[in-house]
Image (cartoon, rainbow, N blue to C red):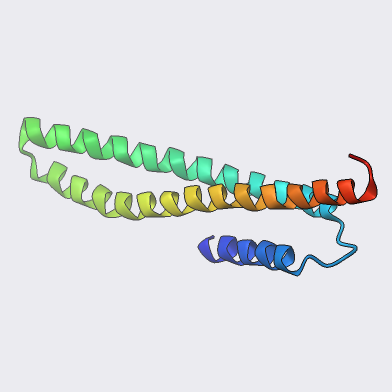
Length: 121
């Protein structure tokens, strides 16, 4: 997923940098918005998974504090090993979607600029 997001953002940046005459910015914006929605959904799913793992980690810590059970300690360690990468991946998704919003704003600015140039204001 990370490679796909980075590749897509590089593509959008390239299209914005080229700014070729005749580019259908409205169609590009529509397609970009669909991609953003896909990534927002992915971000939401990862938020839910990350939150559930964090809740399980807290439950294991509470169990360990109450019972001093070695199995609870082992489970706590296993969940922590999974939780750390989940948090890192969610952080990447969150920041990437925020950057996509900024790129989409640039696309919308191109649409506005084109409308002003055509006298539509």
